[in-house]
Image (cartoon, rainbow, N blue to C red; front, top):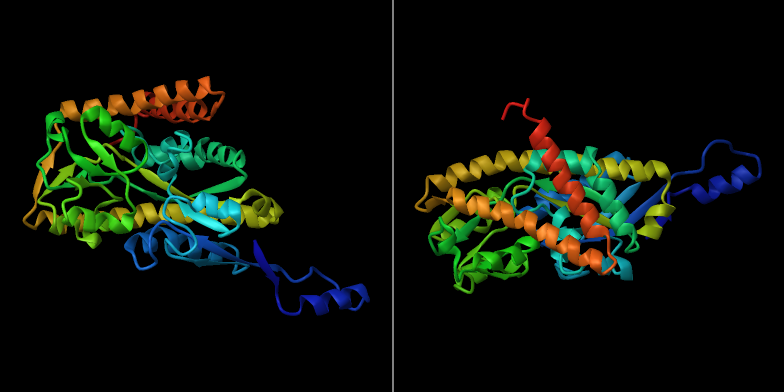
Length: 353
């Protein structure tokens, strides 16, 4: 963690020692570097990363300054956590789904196929136990996580092939990430995990048959609708998603408690901003794409039901596998996530949908 004293603090300390000054010493100023999984020129950066940087600056009254770097400068798209552990970056703005192979619990935190939509997901992460579970989970890795950068449902596919049924997915090569990459195999498709910056080229060159990535507002900026004829909905594979700002645990614990609370609050605020402003931008993006030449298709009821079943089945299977290895985290996170969703569906029936 890089930090400097504000100008005049050394003089103030001398005066204080000599009894010539009273009151609190000048505040400490923290200057941090942050790595990401996208470039600074992308819409994703503006939607997520920049909102977090600005919110931290606002909430800490400028005491914490974050300098963000594009993917590939301090780390690659999938190894931000390691960059922080090794000291190559002070913070990583990471998508947990990229670390599902390290521990499948990451797939739950990323948002599950057939799982909670945005409102329920945000309740679990911010007011429920999801955020605390994530912090405890990262602590075992020498890290601290702040929940931020939340967003709603993705488009299921921008596709070169028409998709409506389970049989339509057979043999398809699809760009995705997280738990969904593994679940796709049970639907007869194969997943290709590639960096976000390479998605457009892969789809354009036919290296993949279809792709999903974030929400409609991001998709339209990438121009995916211009190179894939079919747009497939609903995004049941990713009803909601989140990002995290991850710090070295020793750095986080060295912060004053007030700053810890301010940064945590900044994460929640930036996450809410992302979710709401993306929602508005998504409406505009869908309206524009609907007016274009693309063919929109809807997954049939059987396919949607199957994806819901596979999402929960994947969670149960991975929890059992990890528990047998002595790792309790997948079971803890899975039980909390699906348990909260089940309670919401059972006792939230009074809500107007």
